[in-house]
Length: 383
Image (cartoon, rainbow, N blue to C red; front, side):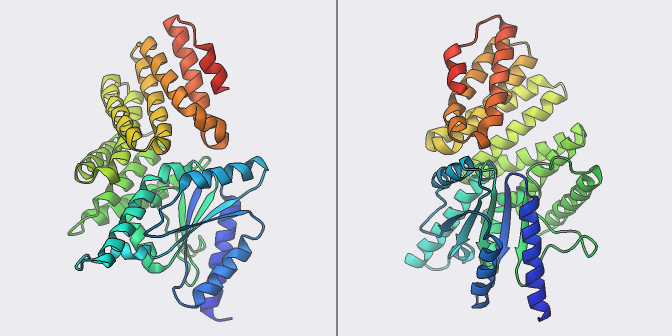
């Protein structure tokens, strides 16, 4: 066996181990050769996944990810107690990186590819809520396009596996090169969290020194650093990075609302949480009111995609109002969030059940504080 072949086998073994250890959602990018070798690499990947049900999806410039269809298929498998994976094969999305110096049908496909990747970028949170591993099968050129047009996907719990030359090596050889985590994994040792903080701060520093920094990447790194510092209890550093992320996403959303308004809303939600934990409740209220307003706008455009996010932000709104002693208004916010979320939590309890329970608990507590009876019909519907 050649060295290159051995490295491909090692990459597959690492991917298999990562799949076995993955708890809940994770995004894996599997980079295969665009040549005939790629056919063999895909065959080896399917053999690795043989013990799991596979939900196969193809995306292309003409075919964005149909997430609702994936959720429906996934729900049926999870009810049977299966451990499925979602395998997304990207076709021709490397066109997103082509310079638009030409016109006509070719240029239109380039724009379609860019829009498909931007749409995928907006679905990061929804992909994370699927609760199962999602594998993106890409060529090196397509992987580069993902890193530019769907950069937020690398801020989720992610890993990159190159089947010819593994990018993730054994710990004794080199620290794994991974995308930032959407949140500090549960049970992660403090030493590992600090390693990741150093890595992401180095990445942020390198990007700042570029002649033309990628602001989307800077915003994403700052967003994740805020979460890592928060997991260590360093609220001031978490606030510093969350404010930086919010400022960057605000500028980006002004230039490209369709691509970045959802990220601005999510950043404002986290900013509100951080401010509230520091006792700065009035500032927290202003941040979450803006986030709720943005999510209401987004729901008008795409209700299925953004109603769960609106529900979550209403939960944050309710918590801030309770902290300010405005329990009646808090109960109203929790109730609205619960109404929006109930259809989702009943259909996909593994994805939305935790949030539904938190909204219900907040609603009951706020009602008790306000001295009013909760709506029994709402509680019965929520389950």
